[in-house]
Length: 467
Image (cartoon, rainbow, N blue to C red; front, side, top):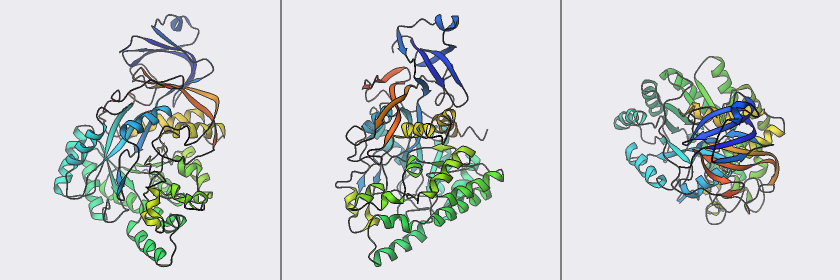
């Protein structure tokens, strides 16, 4: 561990404040903040000084939805914990919460242990786990209590993917009832998978095999219907609910209605739904397969409603659902049958920059940028103020961000282990300059200075919006 570090001359931006301040770091944590140029700031003595003049000093991003090394559709997500967390750091993210998977017929513990084994010693930044619950039974329900006690405080269920991750309404209700008791948070993939499978079968029978039909069969109404059903099941169980990767305006309306009723219901969206659309799914020569994810991309008119939801706080978090599959050899598994295209796209490196572009474009404010990308995910998943802000005692997960630097997003220059970019050729204003994780430089003036094994597992408390 190095000694003290001072970050001088930058604009410190958190979810609540913007202040020209110097930051003193000691033993991996924020020791003090003082307005730049004041005697208090001048008194900071440090072995290392970072000049942040003309730049932002922001909390490291918290990406609460990633899938490193996820098995899906006969293959695996192409980013390992090593490559994926390094790419996250390049993009200004200093904490990920990934999904450990329970397989049907196996215990939660087996799944969690398997994911610990994948991640341990391999991560460049800190990480936590959610638990995917695929097999609700009496043993699973007991295990949920134990996991909450040891800092795995959120459980994901799927109303989609029959035969793989799917839970029926009864299983969902039981898990929700359990989480109402143990303080856990149910995260829901809300799509009516049973109905979608019928539409998939019918589309393929008509010879509709191209990637664009993936978007057509996974209808917005079936996302809205499942969102509504999840909300009402949670209400019956007396449990909070977090709906992942909301993509459709009709689903946002269901969340808004529930929140207006005072229900503890939360929603997340992802950059792909804010910046991409069904136009991408329709790209010729099977290029559309690069954009196959679930929930699917929607027609462009949904974007305005998602931005509005982020402004009005009907949506609270932007995560990536980072789940990359290479075009060559992986996405191509679905040539001639869109239902065999692995679902997921890369984005862990792009989120902070895309959301800064949203600030530049006037969609959100600077503080809201930090709120939806850092502070709220940290609070939602029990890591605040250790993560998600810059305050004395917080982990020194800090990004020096150049708001004026220009970049062109490209697979040629990104660090994710995938052979394409979902945002190829997009021009962005703003770029990460330096990244500290617990005070240690992971990115130093656009050079990677981190290492696998620096990142440590982070147990979490329960959702901090429910206390």
